[in-house]
Amino acid sequence: MKVPGQEAPGHFGLALQNYSHSTAPNRRYADLLTQRLVKAALAQTNSPYTTEDLTGLATRCTAKEDDANKVERFVKKCAAALVLRSHIGEKFEGVVSGINADGTWVRITHPPVEGKLYGNIKHLDVGHRVHVRLDSVDPERGFIDFELR
Image 1 (spheres, rainbow, N blue to C red):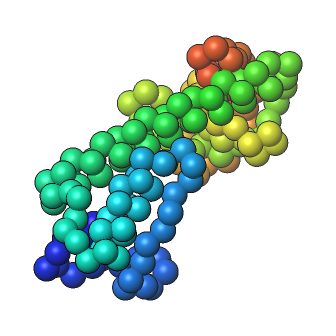
Image 2 (cartoon, one colour; image 1 turned 30 degrees about the vertical axis):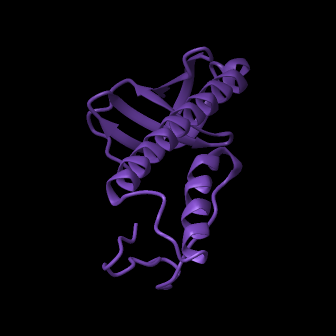
């Protein structure tokens, strides 16, 4: 966010100093805020928002986008579990994709899904290739469970 009197951050990835963009239709409130700011700038009038207003609005928009992303991830996990329901017991090749306090995760490529890994996993690290068997799925909760084979 550029505040009057401060240098605009630009867009690092595009190597542009002056940069703006419009967002997807599900981000209309952020677009509305941007349009109001552009309208004021073109009319050479004061901003309709204070810096504090914009900081709060940007924080809220980011939080709502994060909420939407969480829902989208959950729906994808539920759909993947539903697709795999008829493949319980099948064997797959995968890669350990994550290890955290909740468990160890494996990603298979056909179909491209991720699930929790069970079994003797103490020797595994992220990036290790593994052979797994689909143990169970729970489409309502988006759970996919693999075990080492």
